[in-house]
Image (cartoon, rainbow, N blue to C red; front, side):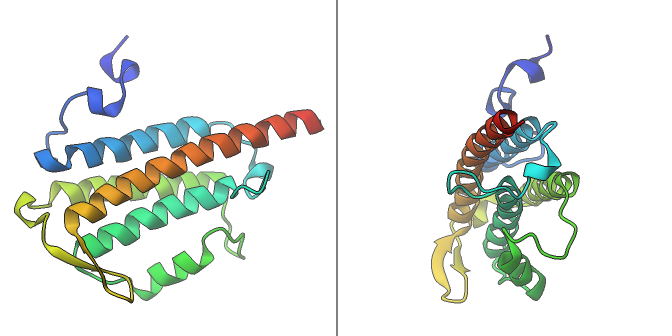
Length: 176
C-alpha cells in the first residue's frame, strides 16, 4: 500500500513549498481536509442542517471551518475583515436563501484549505512573530499564533463534526 494511504499527513514528510516552521500547520489543515472528506462521504443531504442532541449541524461545522481559516489568515496577513467576510460570518449556521448543498459546502471547505496552503507557502518565517490585530477590538496576537490557532480550531471542529455525523447517521437509521 502506498505511503499516503498508510499515514497521517504529518508522517508523510515535509511539504516542499511550506516553510519549516509552518509544516505542522499545513499538515493539520491537510489532515482536516482528508478527514472531513472521509466523514462526509455519502452523508444524507437531508441531515445536513439537522441539530441533534443540542449539537451544531454538520453544515455549520463546514461553514465555520472555512470561515475560521479565512478570517484568521486574513488577520495573520495584517488585514481586517472585509464586508464579504463579515457577511459570511453572520450567516454561519443559518440555512439562508443561498443554496448550501453538501457538495457546495465540501468544495468551499476544500478550496479554503487549498488557498491556505498556498498562502502558507508565501510566508516569510521572519515575519511569524510580527504583531497582528484581531477583530474590531484589535486584540493582540502574532502571525504564528493566528496560524496555529486556525489549525487547532479546525481540528477541534473536525472532531465535533465526526461525533455529530455519527449521531445523525445513527438517528437516521433508527428512524427508518
